[in-house]
Length: 77
Image 1 (tube, rainbow, N blue to C red):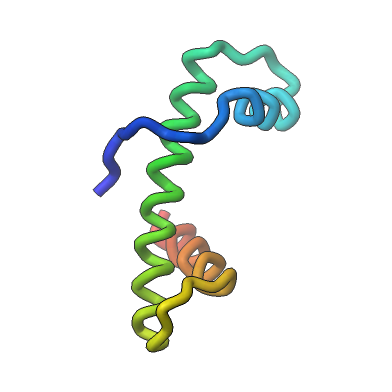
Image 2 (cartoon, rainbow, N blue to C red; image 1 turned 120 degrees about the vertical axis):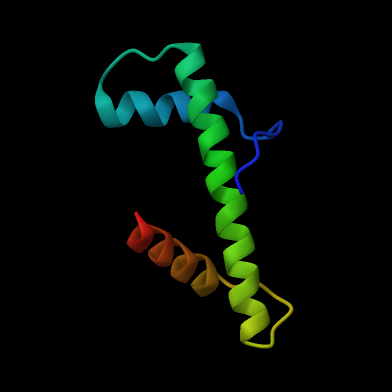
């Protein structure tokens, strides 16, 4: 379940990502909304990656857990 919480993600890099990928101007509210979405996605990916690590009998989440969780998330879309 995605929950909108306060996030520590800085706004400037998010604005830059939007600008560089679209070559358009970006409103502050659009950047803030993307920040919320990215935070929710990061939380869900972290939870899924944690479950993968537990399944593999590890206490450490590895890059491959994140990558697999992301691939699985893309398949669901």
